[in-house]
Length: 189
Image (cartoon, rainbow, N blue to C red; front, side, top):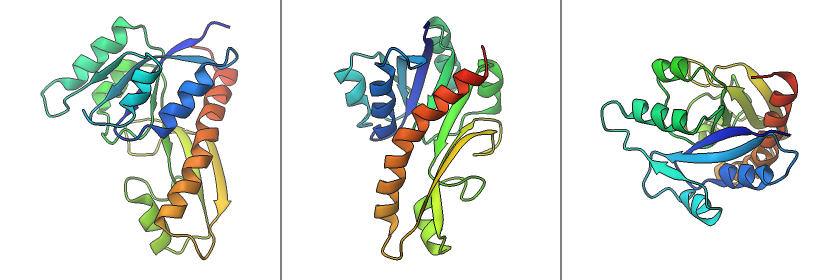
């Protein structure tokens, strides 16, 4: 199998990045992570890049034309797919249009419910009974792209923001790789 060259975008701890790196070591997994991009110089997830010797770039998103720099780096490395894994910056319409290849995101709710940030807090406040995660294509609208995969679980009365986050992340670590496998079984690019 010829693996597709992937770039993972992060901003924080990188737990989904770690999960994807581990899966990408499997010969049957369809992607190889060739680049990691972070918009935070102190993102803990960069430690995984160092640990697994994966090139990484820290992008200062306050600078003008930072997305052009990202596109140039991605082009140099012949990246075929971008996976957002806790990347807390919205990609511009221009970036999405210029990349012209799949961009995936994982979101900690059952979209279209609870788009955006502060997801766990809003789920608790609305007294939801079921939650989960969604892997979807990124389009020009926040958390609105075509859904690839959703997984759900029941919320217990004892759950709080912290416990929801832990349960959701465990589910995400299985769901993101599954969605990538599903994607490559259904399309060729």
